[in-house]
Amino acid sequence: MQNFKKKWKLSLIFTLLPVLLYGILGPLEIYAGNADEFDFILKDFFFFFFIGSVLLWLVGSAVLASLPKKAGDVLHVVIFIFSVLSYVQNLFLNSKLMNMNGSAMDWESMRGMMATNLIIWIVLAVVFAVIPFVFKNQYQKIYLGITAFISAVQLVTIVSLLVTTVPIRYSERILSVEGRLAVAPNSNVIVLLLDSVYNTQFEETMAIHPEIAESLKDFTYYDNTDCHYFYTYPSLAHMMTGTEFDCDMPPEEWKESSWHEERSVNFYNLLHELNYECDYYGEDDYAVGSPTNLVGIIDNTVISSSPMIDHRLLYVELEKMAIYKYVPYILKPRFEVHDNVLKDIAYFEERVNVWEDGGLYQELKEEGLSVDVSLNNKFFVLHLQGFHYPLHTNADGTLSEETTSLSETSEGNAVIIQEYIEQLKNLGGGIYDNALIIITADHGIDRNTPQPIYFIKPPHTSQEEMQVTSAPISHDDFQATVLTCIGQDSTGYGTSVFDWKDGDQRTRECWFPEDWDTVGSVFKPRGYYIYTYNTDRYELMELPDEAGIYVPCH
Image 1 (cartoon, rainbow, N blue to C red):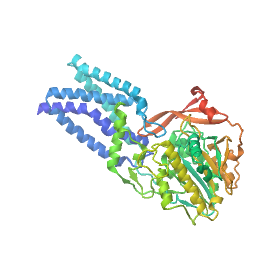
Image 2 (tube, rainbow, N blue to C red):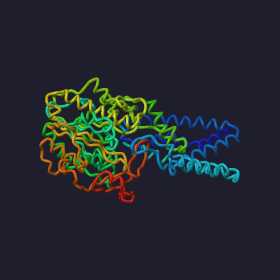
Image 3 (cartoon, rainbow, N blue to C red):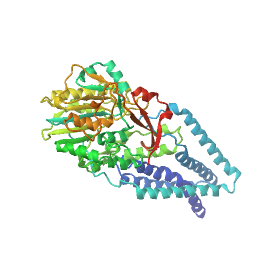
Image 4 (cartoon, one colour):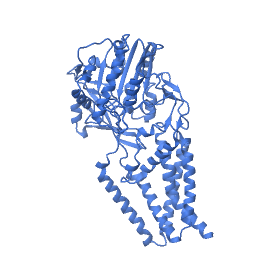
């Protein structure tokens, strides 16, 4: 019995590090780094992982202690090697964990990195495996000391995260999608924002399907539109608030404060004074900030109930993300988790999934647009998935369970736009004629496809065919454009798209996040490369990499 207790204590030390990494710290770090993006909170998962990990630690150590000494010593070395290499992988070897556009990792193109990473694991494993033969009497003390030290550091990190991580409760408010198929009887400002839809791909789709241009004959297409910022954060908050991004502020602080800058406050106050309801239908925290922060600005914020949590899915996906951090690259494809899976973990009665375009198309076909007579006027941004990965929109606009191609998705987006416009027209009562409609995207994809689509139909506009202009416009022009179209003074809001003509030269900046921190499935930029150009997309695409000026973020 005395010998068992001694062996058990030894096993407890050797098994503590992997239990902390994979069972407690891994899931906790994933949550802490993305707490403002998740709909679940700490209590939904932490006690499960903590209690389960402690039980596994105690029982597993006891099993190890019951083995013959030689077998136990071998397993101690194996556990030491695996846990220390996992620690090293996360701390030093994870150079890329995700794509910023949300697409699945192209593991095929990373085979070189995978091989190098595996070689490092093998070399270090061999070194650690040889040491016991060289230092037969000292190796155990060395390994115990290393394990105990790293474990102590991890314990301190766990306590620190538990003390500092927010939120510890569900968001007080969420953005409701009730009414996203309703328009006002008088004046509407309708912004269909298709995520990541860049102009070159959509132009190809229009060339193949001329009926798209026919359905948009009352619109003007601006084929030289600058999004200013990549990606949805900070592009969308900047467009809607008019607030320039501030690299000296923590990301969440800028996102929250952008809505309360003077220009933003004045814009939404004016719309409210003109009896516009102001709604945003899309992802909340990541794109525009906390809905609680938007009270008095965006009107579809509602007090939320506690969500229904799919705990099995939560535990499985959180553990997969934790494992993803620590294992070598050759194993990471087995544990990759995508945003669309995480969205299924929590369900709010007040909110449905607003992300999948095929879901919206189904609602349009089954329920249709309607007129809400309780409203006077309405301003709203309807944020759609567009080209954001994973792609699940069929060419006919319906939702696909399988991944679709970019060309299919582009055609499907066009079908959804056409259906929406046609239903607006069918509502009658001058609703389509009176509406300002903007169809755009928050950003392009990269410097090879940098510019978003931009179609606009001002109120009371009727044309024989869609007009095309290469006027150099920008998402900087959003607020002034809206105010101009509804007959208001836009002084103080910059230029509108109507202030720019074909052939004009305009100095514009495009900010690309080229350096980022990844935690789980969310990226947080460490800095931006700023490219300045004066003409069109082709100049921006042809600029050498060294033309970008790097600006670090807070």
